[in-house]
Image (cartoon, rainbow, N blue to C red; front, top):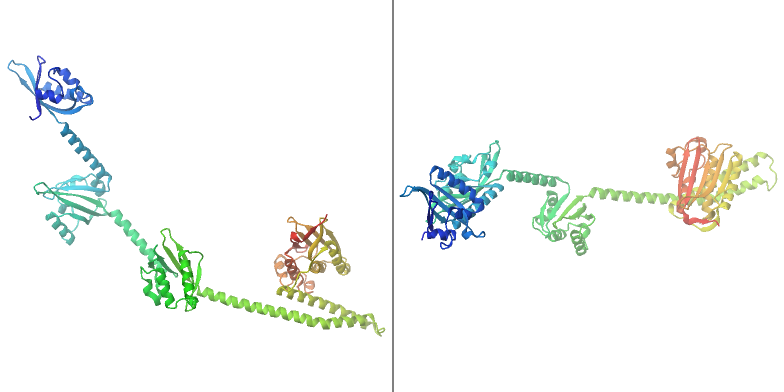
Length: 618
């Protein structure tokens, strides 16, 4: 009835006896199967045969009782394995023969339970060792009876140190404090506790912050059996939290110290945080700077209190535009306040859908820009007044000058009879020459004023470049001959004609030739040429081997009324308007002017006209 089978084995005769329960345990039929030592051992699980043989052999040699647990192929079937426990002892029968008497039990259910418990325990210990926590148990006297090995690696104290001691003996803190008294009251009252925190000094002298939780255990009769619980080391976490908190405080202080006003709105467009500058800026509506305020309510409060000067008279339109800028941030934009303050507002969407608003005070910049605009307008007005005055004076001066030139020519040609003294004829010649020169200067001033005012109009036509060159050379030939300067001319055969204002092109060429002859010493050489450049445009080039221009003066001479001072005697001749006029006329044609020069070696001036103005030859 107990499921125990008994058997005997005569060590002299080899006779084996099995009870009926033994046959049931081992799954054999007593009618067909004979229990012998060899048959019995054949059905022992292969991996257990040697351990069973070794244990039984040692016991038989010493004639000592022994027990073995092993697996057995029930009924000889290799797919049916049962666990069996056998307890053996030695006796002498009535005939004086040694016997082994034994009892066997099927412990399969018990063994599976033990194995499951062991596996569960192994798994639990593996989890406990892998976890950042450690586990502990107390008995009914509140003494530690178990602590997982993880505790030693964390607190640096062997587990054995805690076993048999109470919490009071290992606390490491002042136990008279209120928190410890409350904890001891919980233990004494057998109440569960959670997240009880305390500080202990670690083996390395570093303070460790520990949290522990526990639940009381009771048996089926309700008797208290102790506590089971878990503890964790909070040191790294608390230090990290402390550093994070310090970083947050430092960041908040840095943001608060910025001159810009800053506000953060959550994905639902409610105010999360803002700095003091934002609150100061919105002091009249400070209640609308509290966390949780909707952005549109904040803006509406500003409108209601007339904070936005540029919204007056168009509040609804301004409000809609402000919301649009906020919900779809783009380029920074300017906002005018009612007190004359100007803000540059920049907004940006964050990854979580929040929006950050940054406003900078640009009042000083706006005032500077306003002053600059006013100064520019005044300068432009003064420049227009100057140009108008010069144009007016040029016209006024031309009339008497033309009369002087005309009368001087009459006197010079002695139309009404010979002069009694030849000096009068010489004086008339001098008067005509000076008047003509003065008229040329006035014409330059008039041309420059028209260029500055944009009043010059192009009258384009298609004309021969070579003929234009010939005309200009004839006009300059007299002055060149006086200084014995050779003037050469060349025109690219690929260029047939030019589409431009012929008068202006001739004026460009004549001005450049006049300068070249003026600044070239007697016996010098001047070259005039027209050549196609790499962009298929036309380069009008004048080259001389005259005195040259200092590199620092090239920029200056392109400004009106400025002259180079390479040769003081020559530099003062004229008004210094020739090159600025050439530059303006070239740009009017879409071209550019460039100058290359070396002191004592000469100068090359190039007017580069765009390809669209070139009429190619056949």
